[in-house]
Image (cartoon, rainbow, N blue to C red; front, top):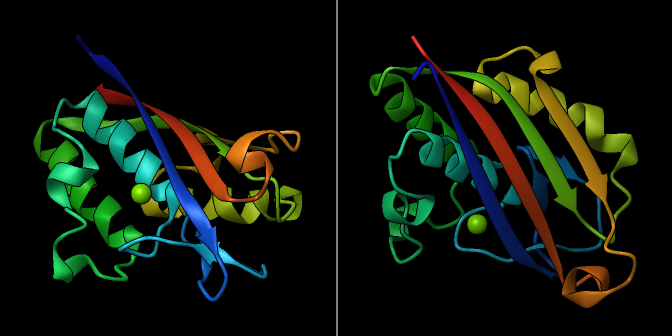
Length: 159
Ligand code: MG
């Protein structure tokens, strides 16, 4: 029982006039993501993966989008609180693997910056994070650029 794995998923609609923030990094784009908080799909998927692995509920339980306190919230703060709970439950983060689905903008040039920032937020080494980005080949809502989604898995180790 030394290890626990978790999976998380999130999707937000794209919208003009919003900032595009992925893994806590502001990405230059003609649109951003719509949401009650800063709509960072990467950090939201990571929160759910961490909470899932530790069996601590989900992001909607902790930070409901009906709570004005979380309006335009920095999702880095969500991760901080989630990590606090994960650690009090006796776990440390081992590694994380992340896949971002975005038709645009091209994320290739930003992958390393996002990975390094996620490592900083999680308090682990960058080489403990795998981050890939893929388009949806022009298919479905993501492929039409109407949304960006993210999958994340994490491994927790019992201290
Ligand atoms: Mg979300």
